[in-house]
Image (cartoon, rainbow, N blue to C red; front, side, top):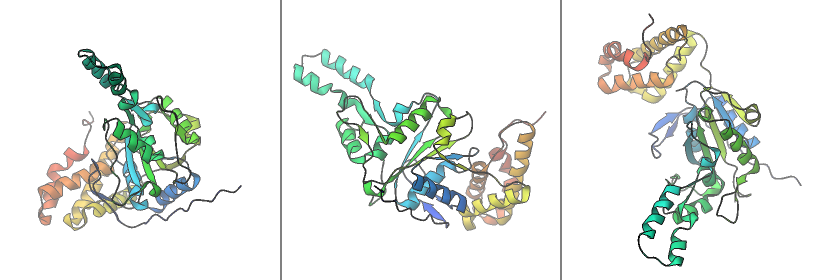
Length: 327
């Protein structure tokens, strides 16, 4: 039987405002053709999109912008060295349960009351994959556990039928078990949870979650994992002219008429020079994030545009030069 193919909406190639969501500040994003097609291809293939690029190149914001463009729920999970694949599925508050057990043991309670209060499901919190696979059951479990973990905040008017975008940020910080376990979970479309009678599964009628995974290439990812992903490489243009032109475009996108035209150009040229100096020392040079930081410093400290070029010379090295001078 041929299953119906999903409808894949277009991604606008215009300025896309990103409102504040939780800890994510308001921003703006502009998709280029390559990244827009990468997002649509991942949706069509129903595979994760692995986004490669140096720190500060906009990998994480791409996922957030995709959620905004598609009208989907956005959930982000930052990976660290101790992260395990289970953490993306569910978490269990063992210390909280132990504390409650000790507190109840200090005072007389009936057996039924103890059993109900110490029910393991009261200490079970849904992880990011649970929310994107099955929002209704995740919400029920969140309520049963008394809100032990933060609940994702969907945009106004959102319902589970609209779908979701899950950002798994900096997966290269984890051991190989995490990407391998993630691959198994995504391939199966679900996972089992101790203490529950049924598995958590993606509902057949719901849109497949768009899973965006970022890496800074600090650790090599398993080959089998990469094969099951679509891959987008965010590269900076080669050559000073193309590189600085790209930076100036990004700067204007964020600061518009608040920044002096010469500041855009001088800051971009300074960043290029600092990148070359860092590369000569075998170090990671500054990128887009540092460039935007520098522009933000200038427009904040010098709201009068004509005063900004002079200020740039005074504050430039604080934002861009992150390494000790050579020699």
